[in-house]
Image (cartoon, rainbow, N blue to C red; front, side, top):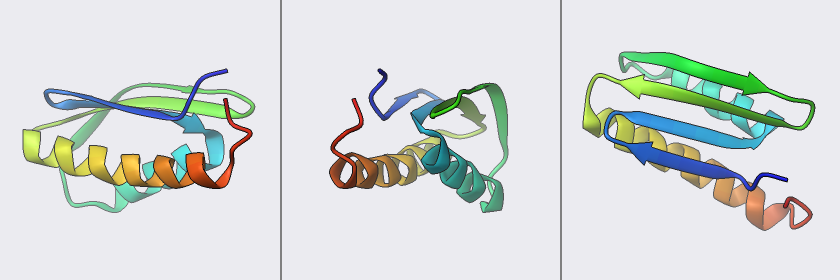
Length: 82
């Protein structure tokens, strides 16, 4: 089973984790006033993943921080996730 994870590389951020949490993270992204492009996504029964590309590194770092905070809370509150 995949672990909740955020990977940031240059202008791209990859988010993977429980489906409900990833959906919440995607909602926060859509409500932000930053230009972005979703370049890939995968949704399963329990897990979801997407990759987003920003126009600037500052925006990518901001979003990686937001996503990481959301997923860290999931890891601490749901120890059964592997």
